[in-house]
Structure formats: structure tokens, C-alpha cells
Length: 402
Image 1 (cartoon, helix red, strand yellow):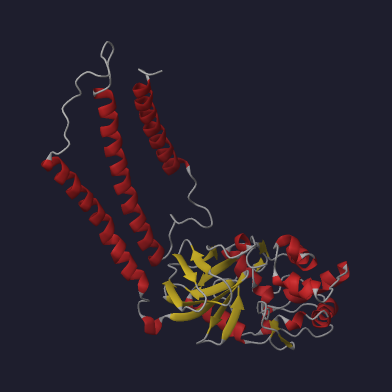
Image 2: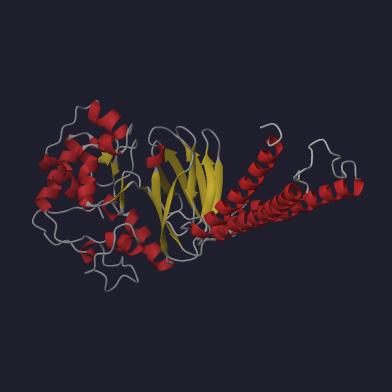
């Protein structure tokens, strides 16, 4: 193997370079970039700025890869040991110590770094400060294990796991955490920014159009880190104001005997401008139209079952952890559920908010999100046991909270 060993090394280098190039090009051309959390399909100025930096870095890296790979391949082929030639023959002329070549390579490296650095620094400055701060909507984001709380201090609104914003308006996010490090990430609108204990942090984002966006915690934060998700919904200004007015109100009261509570019964002044004509459709829950449809009571309701669920919610001590304004539920440990029925997700964005999924979550939260406080400090300590009828009543009650 002695004489063939240098050849084997050169062959391996060539094969590695070729396979690396093929895999790299295959990744660029063959991967589906249109998922819910795609960073390539951007729909906001911050994400677009970050994507531009990525592309500049990508093309510079491709140039370096192709240049170095081509030179390496040329050298391996040009100066290989040929048939009949001994390894100890006089080597080809060496360029080590050639000042012009070495200075040229140094200058080329500096130039490539500058090409990457200029848009990177510009992007850092762009995303560091919220533009038009006086017109921006301020939202305080607080991370918990494992869910997000969203507070709108200017509007007096508190919600959880679904952040609703107006489109084409800067959103200033004050990022906080009350336990471990989390990271706030909405890939199509902005990159990751950490929520760090005892440290104030912030970011901003903006949605170019109405839409339904997926986000999640991007920093390992414990057993159910991968299950810590959320949604962001962008509305036009009129619809956002209507949503905000509804969120300010206390939870719905379902009187005995009322079997067809409609949106106009709730508040005739609160309407979503572009939802007319969709009341009879059944769009996918985890979608923009599904979210809009979720704001309305869907189908007939059973007032007796709903009120049974409300009683169970109190008797099972759920009120010790959850807030439901107007229903004597002052808890602050878990998410605010005042308008839970209008949300499209259960278990912090992990499941679609359907009766089946909500029932499964209430019945056995530990199997869906291991280590959650609801099970550990609620079900276990209080020795909570729920019958199938109890679960149905709680589902009806929580879904009535529009």
C-alpha cells in the first residue's frame, strides 16, 4: 500500500469535494422551503433583511467553495504522480514565500469578509431599533415552561400562545422570562431573540399582510422545549381593533335556556370586516380563515353542559392557576383563558383547538406535554380525577369562551 497511499489520499480528497458539491447543490434545489416555519419565504422587513444577509453569505461561501475546490482538483490532477514516476522525484516549483501571491490571497480574503460584513452590520442596526417607535404597538412577551404570555400594556389586554397584531405596523416586543432562558422565534417575520432571566431584552417585527404564522421557542428550556409553540395572527387595522375590543371584555355568560348564542348576541359592534359570507364554511383550524372562524360560536351550544363545566372548573381548583375574567377565576400561574375558545391551539400551540384535542389535553396533559405544571402541580397534588362526562362539560365550557 506504501506507493499507492498518496494517490489514495488525493483520490479521497477529490471524491469528498465532488460529493460535497453535489450534496450542497442538491440541498439548494431539492429541499422544500415552503413549510410553516420557512426562513426563505419571508413576509416582514426584519426577516427580509436577515434573509438578504444569508444570501450574501451563501453566495460568498459558494464562490470560496468552488474556487478552492477547483484549485484543489486542478492541483491533484496536474501534479499527481504519473505512471513510471517515483515519489522521490523532484517536486514541481513551489510558491511558498511568494509575496505577491500571499498578499493577493490575504487581500482577497479581506474583500470577501467586507462583502459579508457590510450587509451584516446594516442588518444588525436595522433590527436593533424599532422604527416609528411612537406609532409602534408594544407587547410584553413572557416565557414560561412551556408557554408564552402576551400583554398589551397600552390596550389592557392579556392573552396566551396567540399573538395578534395589525399588519404594516411595527410591533415592539419586550422579552422577559420568569424561569429559564427561552427564545422567541417567528421564522417568516423575524429571527430568534433570547428571553434571559433578570435581563430586559427586546426585538421588533412587522407583517406585510394579513396571515397566520407559526412560531416557537428556539432555546432548549427543559423537558417539553420542543412542545413550546405559539401562533401569530396579522389582521388589518379595523379587524385588529375589533379583536382588541372583544379581548377587553369579560368572559361570556351563558344563561340557561339559550341554545343559539350568536356573535351579534355577544356584541353587535364587534365585527370582522372581511369575514362576511364565511359563517357556513369550515376552514382548517390551523389557518388564517380558520382563526377568523374561531372567533364566532360554532354551531349550537348546550347551556346546561357549559354551566356544568364552569362549576367543575371552579370545584376542581382550576381557578387557582387560570384567569377567566368575570367568572371568579383569578389564577396567574397558567395561561389566561378568558377568551380561550377564540384561539386555534391547545397546549401552547401544540394541538389544533378541536373538541377532541382539548378533551385529550384535559384528560391526560402529561402524555401530551411531559413535565407540564398543570399535571405536576395541579392534577397530582389535588388528586384530580375526571370522568368522560366531566371532560365533555369542561370542553364545552372552555370552547364557549369566545
